[in-house]
Amino acid sequence: MGIFRKVSGKIKNIKRKVFHKLLVLLKPLLINIFEIEALVLKYLAAKAYKKLFWATWNISENPEFFDHHIDLFYLWQKTKNSLWLERGVFGNLAIKRGGKVMELACGDGFNSRNFYSHLAESVLSVDFDKNAIKTAKKKNSAKNVEYILADIRTNMPNGDFDNIVWDAAIEHFTKNEIKKIMKNIKVMLEQKKGILSGYTMVEREKRKGLQQHEYEFKNMADLKRFLTPHFKNVIVFETIFPERHNLYFWASDGTIPFSDGWKYWSK
Image (cartoon, rainbow, N blue to C red):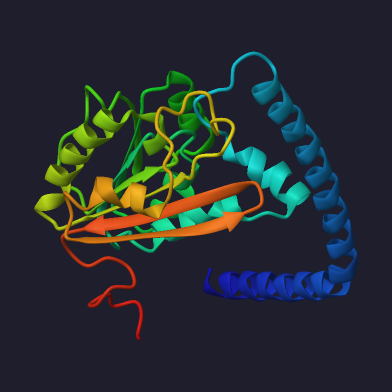
C-alpha cells in the first residue's frame, strides 16, 4: 500500500511538471486568445451600458441615483474623465480601518462596496429610493455591507459610528433639512469622535445640476457654514472640471485627513 502511494505521488508530480511546461509553451497563444476575448467582452459591455445610460437618463424623468457601472464600463472609457472616482478616493482617506461606517443616501452602493467595505468592519448603507436599494443589493452586495430602505429626514438609523459618508446627496435636501440631519450625524459620531465625509457640487449659473436638487452650494465657504457649528475640525476643498465644480469635505471633533495628528502623512 505504501509503495502504491509513493508511485502514485510520483506520477502526479510528473504530470504537474509536464502540464506546467506545456502551459509555459502555450503562454503566448493563451494570452492572445484571452486578450481577444477580453476586448470583445469590453466592447459588448460598453455597448450595453451605453444603451442603459441612454434609456435611464433620456426617457421620462431622471432617477434619484446613478448606476456607476455605467461610468466603469462606458463613460470612463469614452470621456477619460476620472472625476467620478474622486468621491470614493477622498472618502476612503477618512475611513477608520476596522471601523463602523454608515453611508447616507448610498444610491447604487458602488462606493459602499468598492471603496469602504474592504477597510471597514461593517458598512450600513441607507437610501430612501427603492430602486437604488434594489440596484445596490443586485450589483454591489458584500458580506459586511447592509443596505436598508430609510428616509434620513424622518427615519435616521441609530448607533455610534466611526465614519458617516454623505456623498453626492447633501444637495438633495433643503437648508433646514441639512441642519436637522447634521445634528443627528453629530450625535452618532460624537462618542467615537468619528469623521463625516462627503461630496457635493457648486451651483451652475443657469440651471440645477439635477431637477431633484433642493439646495446647491455657492462655494466652499457656503458649504463650510453648515459644518462648523457642529464640528471642531473641518476641511472643505474643491476640484474643478470643465463640466463640474466639485466640493469635498471632512468634519470631526477628532483628527481628520491632512490635519495635525493624522498618522498617514508627514508635513
